[in-house]
Length: 306
Image (cartoon, rainbow, N blue to C red):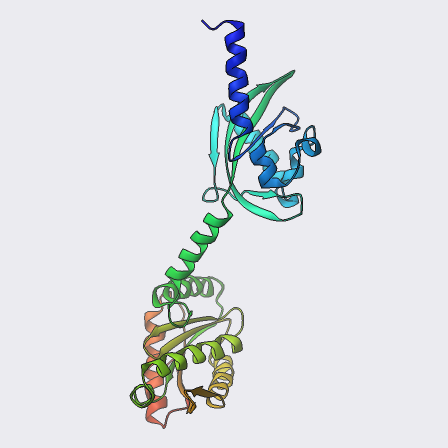
């Protein structure tokens, strides 16, 4: 068994390790008052120990998370668990720095006995802001077309299916447009594929800037783009399509001192009652695009449901 002296030495060693721990280590008593604030916590939160010791832990949390924290602690205390890991994947957790800025965090919480209080807690808190930025960027890259930044086919399909289910549930109109850049092969052959890439990027920028925030814009493949129009019947879709058509046709792309005109043919179809996938409406919109091109390009065609 350890003697009292050896126990004190061990306690001092543990205290020294905790104090110099790279991550933030914070302890609170049963009243949620801060009892320990190590060097890592000072670096993460910007406070000195004198500024926070004895203060409620809420000083380190954004106000919108105060109630959530209290409920989390009560839930943890009632669970009988000795420790619990909390991360952005399971629950939002953010720290609040002295300067008012926030950072995403993960925490490993353990139950402790603190002084005269029956229950206290200590937490190892890690700033994962950069990790979260990286994860968000990877998710963004997985959902978007690398050339234009528009949603890729997979993500567009997923979003369209979600929106179609909502439209069916509430019996609201939903329309889809297919947009096809005219004479794109000729543009590539004449000016080169780099010019074609610039045209696709310019087209995407023009469309995204002109569409509503609720609309979903994606690249279907090659020079074909698609747009989902929530709460919109074919008449409303025609208004939006005409705005896009004019905007594109009035824009001139300058590439290597060459002035390149762009136009697009647009096909429109409305979802039918009960349709919850994109295949049917998109097939009809594609058929309407073919009609627009056959009629002379730089036009809008509507597939009328029978």
